[in-house]
Amino acid sequence: MQAKFLHIADCHLGYFQYRSRDRFNDFAKAFHAVIQVAIDERVDFVALAGDLFEKRSIDALTLNQAIAGLEKLKEAGIPCLAVEGNHEHQYYLETLGWMQFLAVRDLLILLDTPFAAGVPQIKPYANRRGSYIEPKPGLRVYGLRYLGASAPNALAAVAEALAETPADGVEYTIFMTHAGIEGVLPEQMGGLSPIQLAGLRPYVDYVALGHIHKPYEVDGWIYNPGSLETCSAMEASWPERGCYVVEVDTARAGEGEPKHMATLRPVPRRAFHRLSMKTDLYSGPDEFYAACRQYLERRARDLGAKRHGAADAPVVELQLTGVLPFDRSDLDMNAVEATVREVFTPLTALVRNLTTAAEYAVEAGENVSRPVLERRVMADLFARDVRYREKSELYARLALGLKQLALDGASPEAIVEDLDHEMRAIDEAPIPQAEE
Image (tube, rainbow, N blue to C red; front, side):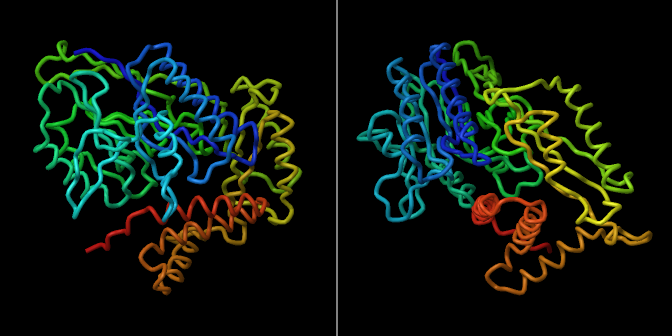
């Protein structure tokens, strides 16, 4: 049996990043670019592993972007198989989410495995519901929506159910879900371990994941293509990402060899430049401003920066680090941002003041830095409140991050947006296990 499919995830249509209409459109451009890859490659189907949308409440323009792309697939005779991600769950008591709406329009085949008394109900797709579908004879695709902290137990139950599920004539199996693997992003808590997925291995040839925006592969079996566009400046240093073009040939595989060949195909994205400059060596603001300009001009030459229009202008983030040897109030962040804009002509310029004031510099012989001490004190304060105790470290990190945004002169809207994003991440994060 031979087949070809496209594996994508984390499109995040509707993300009004930095309140920029151009960035809003960039996410749509990336989505339509990957749709064109599917058509050009003449794939048999597309596997969309969650987070088509940035949020569960979308506007008409975002919906139109999704429909336009999915209609192109439908016209080409390419079905799109999908699962729901954490960004697009319907609101409580809603009868129809937007992913379900697209399924009703026959633009998606929305797969999910419901549970009854903790037991997975593995049923074929029919009447727009079901756990699996066979888009080609001999090829089966299972789907499971985002389940957060309950995913490990759910996957163990699914593995047991797959052992009892008839698979006569099935030569190749894909399992698609929206979940991350622990350790891919060291700063991100939670995620599945390869061991927790290992129970699926006797019944599954390809695990199609989403959720984590950084691309990765595990053992030629677990794949995550990464986000189509750059969702935060921290992603700027990550490898190229976009979609997997997967060719299946069950006759070609030898013993212990995979039945597929997966090729990561990058999708064009707007350039992001994340720069960092230490402030320790400059005794006054004027000296620092002159050095900052020299540094930015040098980095612009290294990066091959040129005068840009909105269509190709980069996003530039400058982080100021180290000890600030002069009064913090004398540092004009607007002047620094203006220099970034003058040198790079970016779409968006972000300047983050991560410096430590001189009066808080660590004294010789101290074992704890001020940021660490501040985080400990803040975590202790949250731990005194029963509502926040179990995730006090996460809330402390959030509070200090909001403080830094305010000190950097971020707008109230940007602070609220960051608060909303981080609160969602805390809600979804598992409760840290106490050390024995």
